[in-house]
Image (cartoon, rainbow, N blue to C red; front, side, top):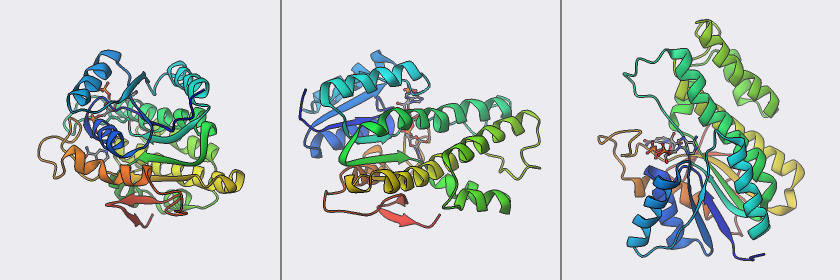
Length: 276
Ligand code: NAP
C-alpha cells in the first residue's frame, strides 16, 4: 500500500475541475487523480496537462453510477488505504433557454448535482484520513435560491439540526412537486439548479457537523464553495473568471494547512466565509 497522499477531483476532464487538478498537481504533495465519466475525455485531459509538464493520474468516475463510485472507493482503499483530499466538482446545468420540461430538468439536475454528490460522499467520506480536506463545489446560486424559498423552507435549510435524511426527503419532494407543477405553491423557487445547489450547501453543513460529532480528533475540514462566474462550457464565454481563477477558492480549501481548524462547515467564495 502506498503512503503517498492522494487527492481526487470529480468531473475534472474540463472546466473548473480540470483547472483544480492543474493547481493541485502544482501544489499538492502527492498523487492527484483527474476523474471523468468518459475515459476518452479523461485521458485527453490528462494528455493536455502532461503537455504542460504535469503528472496527473486517471480514474474513471461517473457520479450518477454507484458501481463506478464504489470501484473508485475500492481502488483508493486498496492502493492508498484512504484519501487525503476530495473535491466534489462534477455538476450539470441546463441552459436558460433549454425547452426540456421543468420537471425533467429538476429530476436530471438533482440526480447528478445533489444525489450523485451525496453518493460520492457516502462512499468516500469514511475513507478520509486525518487532516483530510473535502470541498463541495456549490454556487452563489444556492444562496439566491435559498432567498427564493418560503420562510418555512428557509428555516429548514438554515437549521443546525436538519438531518441528512430530512434533506434527502426535501430534495425528493422538490422533484415530486415539479412533476405535479405545484413546486412554487409549495414554497420552492423556480430553479432546479438553484435547489440542487441548496442541497449541496446544506449537505456540506450537515456533514461537517457529523464530522465534529464522530471524528473530532481527526481534524478533517469540509466546506462548500462557489468558484465564481467562470468561463466554461456551463457558464459560457461572457463569465468574468478564467477556469484557473475559478479554481482558486476550491484549491485554497483543499490545501488548508494542518494547523488550520477553520473554515469548516462553511459556504466560502473568494476565499471568504459567506453567511448562509
Ligand atoms: P463544465 O465545464 O460543464 O464541467 C462539468 C464537469 O462535470 C465535466 O467534466 C462533466 O463531464 C462533469 N460531470 C457532469 N456530470 C457528471 C457525472 N455524472 N459524473 C462525473 N462527472 C460529471 O462546468 P464547470 O463550470 O466547470 O462546473 C464545475 C462545477 O462548478 C459544477 O459543480 C458547477 O455547478 C459549479 N459552478 C460553476 C460556475 C461557473 O460559472 N462555471 C459557477 C458556480 C458553480 P462531461 O465532460 O463528461 O460532461
